[in-house]
Image (cartoon, rainbow, N blue to C red):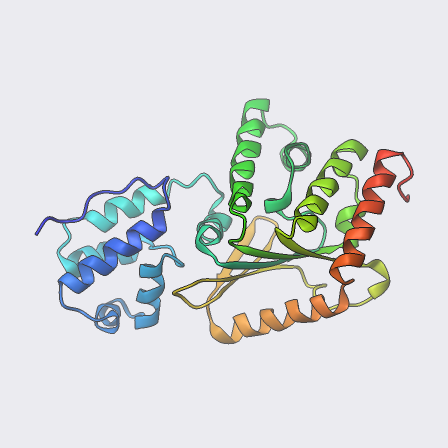
Length: 280
């Protein structure tokens, strides 16, 4: 029986690696739990690798090649996957995003990456990296815009975002860039491509003051939560942690304005940016 082929990591890499792992494991006559035992991981962890919701790290790849006699296949492809176009602290979350069936996202100070426009993204990257050459900034913007194409599908993933009012009031890139970004988000909401709520300033204290969170659900794997800060990010799969973060998002939804009121506020602020009437 022919062995697995090396994969192109630029095309749904984790899903393909996962499929090959399932093929090799079943061909060896092992259950997920039996493969996980010598790796000191659970059978459910192996299931997550096979479903593509978790990244296969090099230490596991080397051992899997030995256990399944796959002649270095997983090590080679794992090394290729490590050359991600995303920062290390975000790469695993970005790959999971691609196969998620639903994404719930709260971020306190910015418009989420999946909703950003080129001008908005460029202003962000220039503020983060003021001495980086233009060509590198253009590459970063192009990579982010490639992520936004996830919304080209008319229904999947379901994207539910809670925007803090601070994110729509801070003029990143200037009034014109902000107006464009807000109109773009409003258009997605009007077309029912996303569900969008705004968490207003007058809500006062709320459950999301500790930072941003992203919850992702999948067809054939348990949900994940991604929490991040400056140059750091953590992908959580512990059921208790995911449940805790899911409750946080539910509390944010309950505190935020209803979708129609949120859309009205977003369009009012966009109008203010367009006409130089934004609040100080």
